[in-house]
Image 1 (cartoon, rainbow, N blue to C red):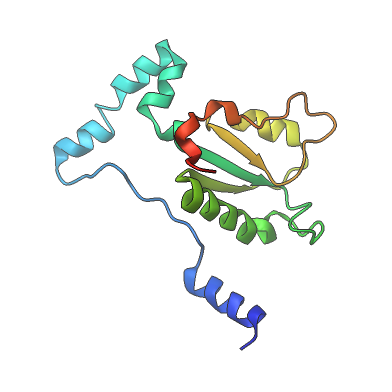
Image 2: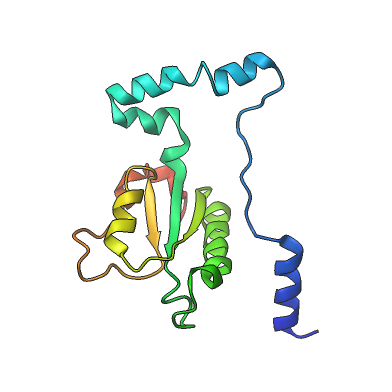
Length: 155
């Protein structure tokens, strides 16, 4: 079996390289009431009063988006957002394994980079663009300064 066949076999076996794992356990009805409703209202209220608390009460402090429109994936050209997903998942694995940073791949069928990036700005601590910012992008959207210094360890 050559490397290409092996890579396809592994990707099929994994059926995706990442998954979401809950940090909250829901063993009892009380656990559910704290994790979701009515308990979730308290952090929501606090965050509405001070948005910086979103870094304290949510995973936002350690979550990034790896975004592509599929137009420049690993030098393969404009292969589309769906075809870019394996690369975006791979980048998410790198964030987790080398920096213990949670990452989600977002493969979006839109060339409107500025709009995509602005929509993500308030949801995540970081935005890792697969493609350089378009000329009309009014800011670079690489918010490395929002991570605490220890977020990337020795990287």
